[in-house]
Length: 129
Image (tube, rainbow, N blue to C red; front, top):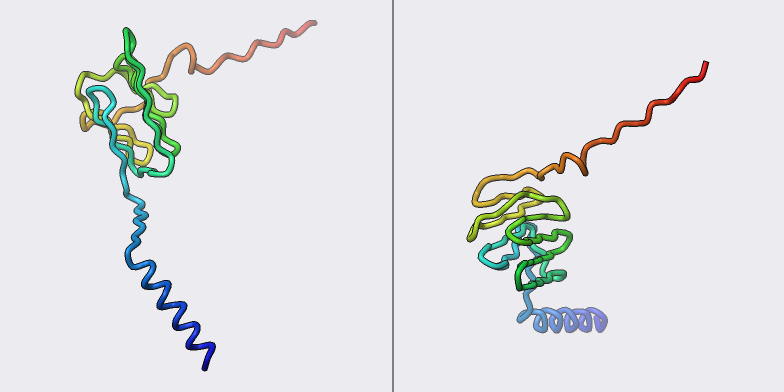
């Protein structure tokens, strides 16, 4: 009986002490940041590992890292996780939603650099007779 009373007291203490604390973990949470004239939204957003950097001058560069998503805007050129997604016009919104990149409401695919990303041909083997 005494053990049950102690257990009840411990449970009540935990309940009372935790009443003022709320922790919200949502799969669909998002993080928002303004990078220059662009509003960037990342879904899902990770509040624990978020950084923002900006470099100004002749070549403005903005970086927003949220979890494993890294958005970089350098001279209006957009890249997400190291892949180029083309040029932005001032004020366009960028959304990265579970890996899908949208600019001004339109989904974009990564831009393939024809020289850097093209498969390299294997050297032909010479046969001596």
